[in-house]
Length: 487
Image (cartoon, rainbow, N blue to C red; front, side):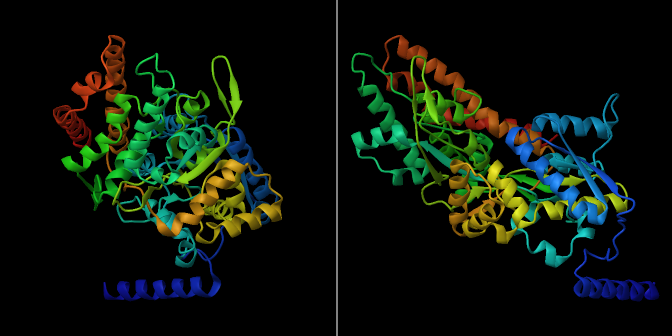
């Protein structure tokens, strides 16, 4: 036993020295690749449209350069949507009839990767990256990928996003000029609620012969982010995970603030959610502003299209709002890439591709099309983005550029956060996503029906916005969460 300990100690010292001297990955200091006998890799992802075109172009560039030199050939395949990709991966793992073999690499969010890791199907990437390499990546991105029980890396960060707010500038200016309300008001969630009420009342006043026909001002995508980040801003980690065990934190007063600043304005018609995404609602003129992913910037419309008219609009990009007095915390989201457990040659080759893809120039080229944030520390700057655009002569959409640079300029002032993975995490997130949202849609319909019967807004909304109504929802919400996390 003593000799074994000495041998392990000497081996560790030798590997560390080799890494420091040669700058190679982990203790795997000799490449198993052979350019004369290339390794072929398949990558499954959910990119479509311009994102897929950008990814495919980078794969082709890799194959023609570094891949040819080292002996790696990559083929990318879009599986459609995120849910389609997750289904394909689960079918492969379970060996369902007609399912394709597991790909060498696939895009994955942390909750799905956690499920696959529990099945023992993911490669340990820690063996292929040394500390110097890991330190080049944004720290929180690496930590998000440490989902294995021993803390080793299973998710390679490749492209991330956070949330921003986008505003129909053209119609905002009409409202602001008429009311004197400033953009500064939109920096807090409470300010957005107050502004949305003012907008509803202003638009209602434009047609004095038609009572209670005010319009919604604001909406948001991904209500689960509102819960997770909103609570974090208020000092509460709703899903606290330690040593693989999750503790649920749902204090009543903090959740009341969230309810008061989403459900209440939804029920009263100050907020809205009509299409599949809030950018759709801006396009139809149903709202003026929304909070959504940086990757949604490319979908912000250039026109408002009404039933009998359309007109051009300009836009404003702002950082996502924060609760008054809260920590400036923003969501960290976006799938990474995971590597299927196989053999050393395939795993090594997969990591070589992912390291190449996340080099600053390549990652920013992809991000400038997709709206995703690069994952290396050095790449998260306006200066680096401008350098890459100039050197590669990229044609970047102004909305995407403004979105990325807005985030880059504020990154030092914000804390990016995502909860750690845990069993049934996906099911718990669905409760956050739909429980309150579905209730708000249902109760808004009841309020509208009451308005049509001649009640005013305060009378129609009163049964739904009382403290008793909140406490009834709160109990239901907590029961639903406890039910899924205790399975």
